[in-house]
Image (cartoon, rainbow, N blue to C red; front, side, top):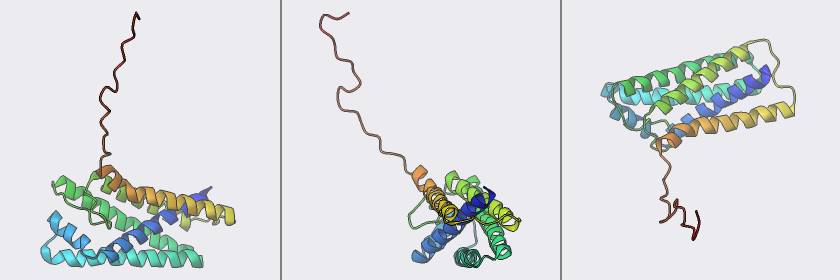
Length: 194
């Protein structure tokens, strides 16, 4: 069970890094614009911070994937530890921005997801998963033992990664409330009834 947990947590972290890097690379102006709107960094530090975040996500995703495919546990544990640090920094930054009353987009995806406690919570969840995955990967447990376990871990990782990635956007957009049709919710009168 530990090997399945480690593989799933590793997959979630690597997919989140890949999604973040892809979002930043496909829409390179979104993160600098968001950082500018937050007004927490000096203007001259905005672009370098955005480039550093994108580079860190990209390099960690590639290095983690390579270490996973090559079976290098120590390298994978190091990548996961670094990812835990990156995600914790995102969570701390978001928490600080919210505490300072700053709003705007988070700059974390291709869509304009508003900066919120959900964004910080996702970052903390990913930091925790990365730390757990690093600890389990560095341990002496065996990797998943066969196609069925690898498939289960991969499916669980994709599902959890998609859910975590979509959570802030889903929670930031309230569901449309439909008005009940006229007369709905009323009990019709019964003739001659008691």
